[in-house]
Amino acid sequence: MGKNWDKVFIKNDTVDVRKVTFRNRYGITLTGDLYSPKDKLSDKLAAIAVCGPFGAVKEQVSGLYAQTMAEKGFITLAFDPSYTGESMGEPRNVASPDINTEDFCAAIDFLSNQSNIDFNKIGIIGICGFGGFGLNAAAIDTRIKATVTITMYDMTRVTANGYFDSLNEEDRNKLRENLNKQRTEDFKNGIFAKAPGLPEKLTGKEPQFLKDYYDYYKTKRGFHKRSIASNGNWNMTSSLSLLNMPILAYINEIRNAVLMIHGKKAHSRYFSEDTFKKLKGDNKKLLIIKDANHVDLYDNFEKIPFDKIENFFKNYLN
Image 1 (cartoon, one colour):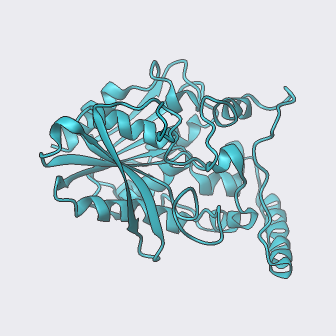
Image 2 (cartoon, one colour):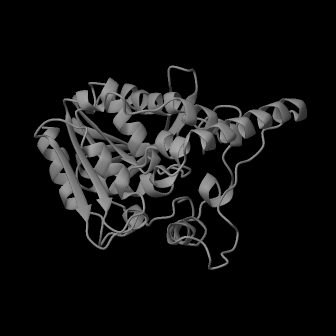
Image 3 (cartoon, rainbow, N blue to C red):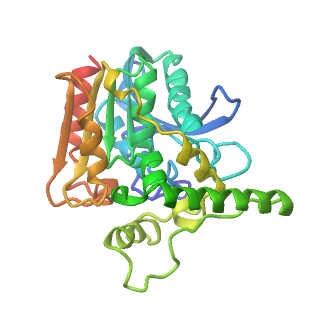
């Protein structure tokens, strides 16, 4: 892939890529890779900000999407969210429904101020948990003219309710008690305890979706040393904010275009299906990909509908 190429996907030499930094409104400096088609470097182009999956870095899925859309004529920005990857923020490996939504808006700030970008033609791609944060950003940031979500997760819903909404009030109360007990211990110890991550080895008894995650994050296919899902752990008590602050409250008021894409075989498909029912307008579409699971849409070019994504953005970023 080249001596200086630190991505898990193959470099396309028709695309220029350079590292950039920008600050969000919480004062955190974010780091991203800006991809531009080499044959259009002097043109004023439409742009797309890309982030996700939850626990991944820009050298993985978001970078793959960014490079591919740059091949198709867009300027794209794949960035690491606050507290992760090469972006700043302490303590490390923290998630926040507010700050991670703001990260998308900060990416729009940056793109809107580039001389070779038409600030009226900016969209976003949110993948997995950042599909939810991306939709949340689209609900507040009218500069986002078109939004694509890929295998979208609502991280606040799954944290508070468990998979398939299996947790009840008593379960949530026990979770709150355990997490707040951990806060006390963290303060006493001066360190932040880590949440469980993917296992280093599979036993074969794991649910299929965990095996799928392992197959991407823990193997040569998608492993990256800076990725939380590959080589680290989330901060355990950051789940408290996800538990207590649901996102997507105003997505029914998104007026700009939305395309939601999910695999038919994905364990997470219900997030997109339920969320799509809340959207209004003829410019909202749900696309279910036959024979695709959650992770297939991370990097499987035979299943990712890049042609439909391209047409969507060219239609609504015109």
